[in-house]
Image 1: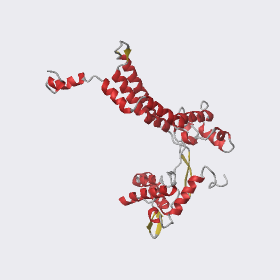
Image 2: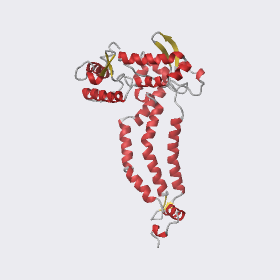
Image 3: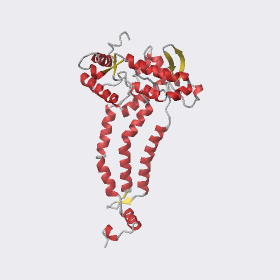
Image 4: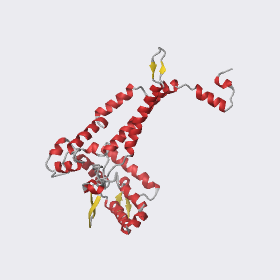
Length: 325
């Protein structure tokens, strides 16, 4: 890439960031986007909060930028500095590991504050081959420090996920299955004499399934990691330069090669993030009727007489409260 500022993929966000820098020097925006400390103007976005007003100043600066550019933008170099502030909160714990860590964090926060650096985070998430112990895997499948220079540490590798999200999806699936199985086991006769699933149990399952569906879709996205939205197309996997790196990090083992993972991630994108996915989700929700109708069906189908009679007897209430003489 000869000129990143002219590349069609990068140019829009670079233009926005350049405009933000220019706004900081303009009289109309300077006092909103910057503050003065030690006779120097510094960015409001990177200012460590020391009082409540500092937090109020940040959204004001954000709104000024969004109004100026006429849209919404993210990843403009200030969104990860907050993590560094959090590390300052844990500086004592860091010092117990290595006395230099606390000082390094302080210097890093000061450098971002004073230099208005474009501060971002990056990660990869190839998962790795979980059938192998960490020491038996390609080292690049795990985050590790490779060397330290005057400019800082150099790391390689990636993070690995846990099974908690998978368990959430399993509970969702099994919850739906439990409602369906129980409603069939407790089948009732319809007014026409046909056996039908027990209605309140069935409708309760529908509420559970529909109300939790968006959350479960998001868990599926998280399980895919950032790769669901950044995985390149097939041509990039075959291209010179990019192809070798993509095949390396997208390959898990002999069974799961890079092309297979690219296909499954593209499949997940189509099911979860695409226009088609949004359309199908809206249609499915529409086909099942509005959510308040689901709740009304549950309320209307449950036989409250048993629970009400139990409460009446336990509280020693008069039969009259149930309409009895």
